[in-house]
Every structure is written in structure tokens, then in C-alpha cells.
Image 1 (cartoon, rainbow, N blue to C red):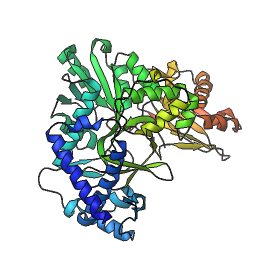
Image 2 (image 1 turned 120 degrees about the vertical axis):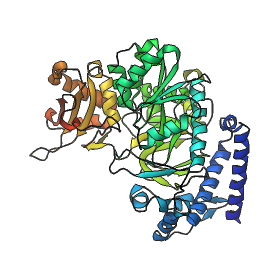
Image 3 (image 1 turned 90 degrees about the vertical axis):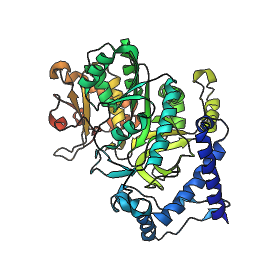
Image 4 (image 1 turned 60 degrees about the vertical axis):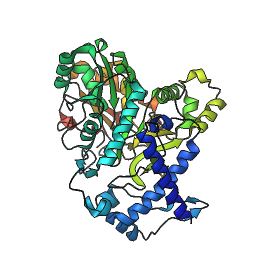
Length: 500
């Protein structure tokens, strides 16, 4: 009976969504405050329905459940215990089963399907299939999100994500061409510069790309950014608030992040003026930071998301588990572990915390919606361990932006923790100098103590780790010319690799 109720409930919800979409009411309803209990129940009901459908129609998922000896979750009242459903990820599901077996009815349609692949930045590239319905749904949501951030005036989008078959570049172009002018350039600074000079400063530009590329674009392109109306949307990795400050100081009008994954979907969660304001408040208020954040070190990205579209759970290791609740996906994702670290906070929980800390409403931009908050710390495996401290690329990024001498000189960095002949672990930060800069631009002997002191002020665990070191030589900075050493084979088209 409970099973049938949830299936019927979800069917009615989907019919309403279809009706509201046709009448352009869906996006207005998305931001109505006070409906999160309904949204959260929708997430559970729709996730259960997607589980039932995938079990029935997707050969790979049916076999996956059989291998795990799982038939279905138990119920607590009218609520299914979704946490009983086995978790999927790249290793136990994507790499084990062929793409067509992961699709509904075990086949890929001969028309209307886009095949793309991930960049392979974390290993072997994987292929993904996306049908017309999910692409259309995502395009509507991207349009709505952009208009919410930038207004309804026409925009000129420059897609600087990697092109070709890779997921982000392909899907950005397909999604945005329906409602905006878009030029898909890829990460080519010269072509972007030529485009801006050719079309002039009469347009409202939005340039999309990975954070390191956008920073190098601002540093290397010989135009006055303040003469243009240019904003950035970045994705693929976190950005320190100091880097956002830097970009804004150069004349970029707005800088927002969008959380997406080729494994799942573009635009699963987004920044807005409220979440950025909250992140900046966390940067300046250590007590609030200790209360809200789960992990020490660099600030996580702070997003809002719609639980009716994505159910986000957190496992015992602090990793985010995603279920796509939207119907019509030809390769369903049920309790999929991206191996990203994070946690969720409901808006009423945040407001209670702010009240306890005596933080007045005027200290924060008023949120447009009470959608839940997602604190995203990046990939769980994108850290190094050093004498009990956990150090992430964002920690290093924040330290760089805390030292003006480095901001104007460093192009990229690399983190290693090798052991010396006596078995002592060392922390080595390799810096790649910008293309037209001299290695002598940085005095390493002078910079080393300054940099690691700055890192200690950002990462409390590292501050304690420093006290245990037998020698200051266990923390080192090494400089490399552009494109040399560990940066020799770096591919600007994909996300940077920061850890060996």
C-alpha cells in the first residue's frame, strides 16, 4: 500500500510539474518560501519511484541489486528508508557495466541522444548518455538560473570549457543556445581576446570556464576589463574568496560558481549573492565557522539546491550521495557517490544559528528563497595528509591569494608529500611561474616562512602539525618555469591536477 501510494503521489507531482512548465509557473514556484517540507518529501518519494523504475527497466541496475542481494528498502511509516539502498559509484557501477546496460531498456536510442565523456582528470574518461528530455529540462533550469543572477537582458555567452566530446563544454553549448547568443571557444585566451575586441563593449558577456583558466585569462589578455560588462561563471573546482576578490578588482562584474558533475548533471546547485555573502561572513567570523563547518581548513563552496530535483545525502565518511529525482533520464542515477565531501544545512537551521550568534539580518543579503544550503568541500581524495593535518588545494590557493607577491606571479601549483632517506615526511609545494615571468621574481628563501605561516593561519591542523616538525626543511617551496617539471604535460583543457 505504501509502495503504491508513493508511486501515485510521484505520478501526480510529475503531472503538476509538466502543467506548470507549460504555463511558465514552475520557475516562479521554485523559490516560494515555506515549502521545504514538501520539497524534501518530494525528494524521497521521487527517489523511491526512480529506484523502482530503474530496478524494473535498467539491466545494469537490476544486476547490481542482485549482486548486492537487495530487493527493496523497508518503510518507516510512509517513508522508505532510502539509506538501505546500495550506493553506486564509478568503480562498482559505471566501470563494471557498459553504457547501454546502464540505460533504460538496456539500449541507447538511435536518435535524440548525446554521448559525451568526462575529461578523465581523475583517471580513465567515461562515457555518458543524455536524452532530449533531460537536456531540455536542464536548459530551462540554466536559463532560469542565469536570469535570476543577471536579469532578463540579453547576454552573450563565451564557453571557455573544453570542447569536443567532453561533457561540460558539450552540454553548456547545447543548453544555452536555446536562449542566448553563445560562442563556444574553449580555453583559448587569444580567441577570447579577439572576440571581445571584435564585438566590442556593447554586450553583457558571461564567460564560463575553470577557475585557473579564468584567472590566467584576466592576467594575460591585454584589454581593460573595466571597459567591458563581463561576468564569470566557473565550475569544476572550488575558488577561494580571495581569488574572487582578485577577479572583481580587475574589473570583472560578477563571479558565480555552479556545481555540476559529468557523472550526474550540470547545474545541480548554484551560488547566488546570499550564499557568497554567507561564505564571506564565514571567512571573517571564526566562531561561526567553527559552528557551521564540519572540516577545518579552506572554506567550502556554499550553494543552494532544489531537493525536489536532487536528493542529497551524506554518508558516515562525510561524502555526498546524489539521486536524480527528475524523470526522463535515460541513464538513471540512484544513490550515486561522487566521492565529494560536504554536508547540507536547512535554511531554518542556519537562521537559528545566526540568531544564537547575534548576527543581525542587515549583515547578510536577504535570501530570495529558503532552499537548503549545500556546503561542498571538493573531492574527498583531493587532499594530502601531513603529520595528522589534511591539506587541500583550496588551502594552498587561499595562502597564495593572501600574499600579493605570489598572486601576480604564480600560474599553478602542485602538492607532494615525499619521504626523505630517514623516512621523514616532507610537504613540498611546487609553484609554476606565469609564462612571461622570471623564476627570480620570487625569493624562495624569503617566501617559504611567509607562505607556510599563511597556510598555518588558514589550516588549524597544519598549524599544530608544524609544531611537531624536527626541521623547517620539512616544508619546502620549489619553483618551476612555465610548463616545466610536474607542469610539463599539463592540459589546459581539463581540470588541473594539484596532487601527486
